Image (cartoon, rainbow, N blue to C red):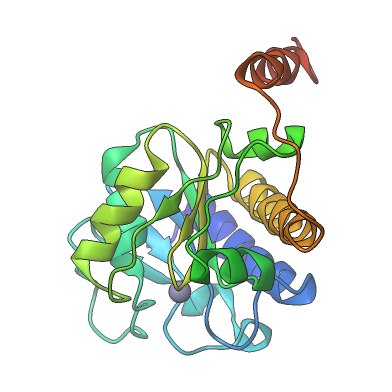
Length: 216
Ligand SMILES: [Zn+2]
């Protein structure tokens, strides 16, 4: 039976998938989106373009990837999503995409250093790069979980980017900012490279972030 929370998450996953396509973070069927639900997760199906996605097409999996019969196949990257939920109780939503500039850097083997204060949206002074592993494998899931460590975002070598957050809206916003930071960093590399902010400046940014918004 589908409860209100599950239905809300199914709708939000569709909205986030369509927003990723609309904002140019994704093309075709390459991205995937999930949300934690109880001990399992809801994840986008394999091979459905965001335009044609509906809430009932979102696949419910248990933590081992088991699904009730008769559903669409889950995203081939479901292990990556399930692995992050298993490692990180603070994450309730995961967004993965092949956004262009993040992917350019990932294919060049570059993490994003502290060249701009907004790199901090990833939760650390650097947006790290997970090593390359074949898509869809448990090895890739482990590499991503390790690279994400205590942060919210990482690049994935020769692949793309992945973001985990407490909500789907936050995960989408961080993925969009990671792509923007990747684009600007890429631009600085074309004109001799960026000036890097030092640890003290980045510590001040994190202090500002903690005081920013409501109740800080
Ligand atoms: Zn991918």
